[in-house]
Amino acid sequence: MTALEAKHPGENEYLQAVREVLESIEEVYNQHPEFEKAKIVERIVEPDRIFTFRVTWVDRNGEVQTNLGYRVQYNAALGAYKGGLRFHKAVNVSMLKFLGFEQIFKNSLTMLPLGGGKGGSDFDPVGKTDEEIMRFCQAFMYELWRNIGPDQDSPAGDVGVGGREIGYLYGAYKKLAREHSTGALTGKSYGWGGSLIRPEATGFGAIYYVERMVKQTGDKMEGKRIALSGFGNVAWGAAIKATELGAKVVALSGPDGVCELPNGIDKEMIDYMLEMRASNRNKVEDMATKFPGKAVFTPGKKAWMVKCDIACPCAFQNELAEADAKELIANGVKYVAEVSNMGCQPAAIAAFQAAKIPFGPGKAVNAGGVATSGLEICQNAEHRNWTAEEVDKNLHTIMNNIYDMCVQYGKQADGTINYVKGANIAGFMRVANAMLAQGII
Ligand code: 2IT
Image (cartoon, rainbow, N blue to C red; front, side):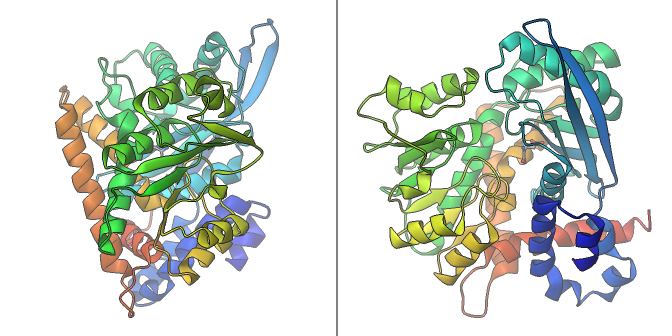
């Protein structure tokens, strides 16, 4: 870590993600001198390569805009690079390196043949028109198309990139590459290569994992109050599945504040989340304006002020701080599961673990998204569309398997489960063994 900090000063998210993994695997790693000999850790922390490129496009006023685009191809020991694209004004190399690093182990946990990658741009979708988004996606693909493909690197969505953006990106890719390689991008719409359940998959998978965490303690989902942060694709899928299992979604949030939902969320409100996302306004207050009384807006506050049994960050890295953890604990939270990547700050995780509150880490909890991207690639390769039931059944099996591996590797002497440790060791071992078998490359 000292060497890495000196080599990559100021890359705080990246260093945070690496530190968490190295601390978790240290003991197991040291039992494998062959890993040490092949310098697996020194190699795995550095991406295979990073592409950085200029993206120039014309906005609605005819003005020329310039953004930066990136693709981090991190590790291909298990398969072609796979991971989302993030469009957000704060995107930089450190953020994409942390996301790409996490993706290696997450993809490993799915047991599918997926390497790790991530990409994106500092393009800010907030307030943009549909045409501006299309032109930006096309300009982004002018640069990226040569470096992706079903057997090379397959991007998907992340924050700021959903079905609409994937459609524009795929259209541009196909035109430039002159081939219909559907597996070059996932998260496509149904009808031209997309998979049923992919939009819901991150949220559904997360709730399948949470359900196991709850059952582990002899408890049940029914009647549980669950606070979600964000209101995007991930929170949407989690809200559907949590409601279906009889839990009550009591909070959603946005950069502008929190909406408390005293009676839980209903179908109309869940559908409205999609409109809120499509509007590019990025304001959760719109929910309270649309459903007065059913959603009560408080500006400037986070979802964690709302009393709940289960807390699920679904928005952005480091969104849940130590003070939030203390407030949740004081309000009686029973389970915490990260659905966003690295949603909790290290001190918040330490606070939950010290209070003996089961804590599920993002790379295990949210792996259903990329797992279903893997299933989309399978369907593309065999020129077939699976039914929703078939996809959901596969997703559920994968999440159960991930949960079981976390328990296997994370069981502590006192009988409690350290899910962070379990996920990191299980994810790491598969990649490390593959790297070892494939030689020094
Ligand atoms: O963080 C993630 O796992 C994603 N944004 C989804 C990646 C993917 O390739 O589906």
